[in-house]
Image (cartoon, rainbow, N blue to C red; front, side):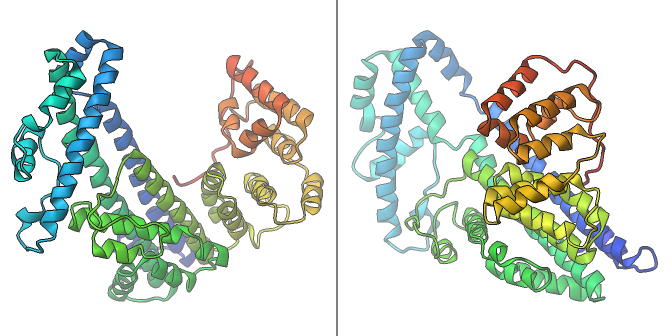
Length: 461
């Protein structure tokens, strides 16, 4: 892993100040990883829309009608499970021969006709006759229905382009996160310890070569990674993502001994040789997991390199909101505390202030009376009603929240749609029927005046 041009330039003290050099490198690494995450999400979304049945299937479905089509697909699923059971049984008996010949353990999906002609024939069955009677019974002898089920089986049995994409995205995601972390570690060495480029590369590669748990230990030696963050279960979840990536590359996406070793701490482990799912749910969970860890790291490193700076605070705002939207209260509190520590009490980062209070309120670990007193004593800026809305939400003040929300709708400082996606407002909607009613009315009736956008004070993805 080589340093980027920005990192090398950041090492040149004649061009930039120490503080700017460090922040520039961190911001660049974060934005690059953020763009990659966005691209992967968009790719999954686009591919999902394109994953449609073949034209012949669609034509036959029109002839069969919706109800019959759904019943026949249920028949197809039953037959597919039986075929897979036979196939898995064959694969287990083949792998027990312990031969190095790759043909002995071929387990990837193949076209249905080839599967039935070759695989089922090996266990005393022959071709289509293996399921012919069940196929005819399930389809009532209707040749159109039989043709549809066979096409359905072929479509489901073969690896669809979307499945291939999902499997391919996981190695890309892992590689992107590794490069992101390596960039942070190189910046630490280049700008923090005045190391040479070569030694910075060597150090970063050594850390990346270990497990996520070892990464966490190395990171905790550099930045103030709180104990509850360092011991979070997501580091072990990240280990599983990386182990699954290795299995995709080296074991055809199936559980091998290395996967079991790398995930030894899991409560429920899959059996040796079983396929590892990389469906839409898993991919989205892996994306969110590594994105969340990246947010913690970039805020931790930026505040370590440039503590008590407005630049670090502004850069962190979107990350705190993202943590709140995922109900990761402790993450949001850690990031808000990190960037606000050392700033004067009358700082102008009001969004960070109220989002930090929200995290404290939702965690419920501090004295709530003291927290409400602190919120009550705060005076939001007069020209931004969105912060009066935030204060009312934090204090569970229905009337105050409704009045402030209506003021926001008619002001030129906030967009109603953006306000309703603010975690503070979302939580208030769930807890207050009156306030939720007001927001629903706002959705049904556009704002009475032209809505301007919020001040542009965010940076990063």
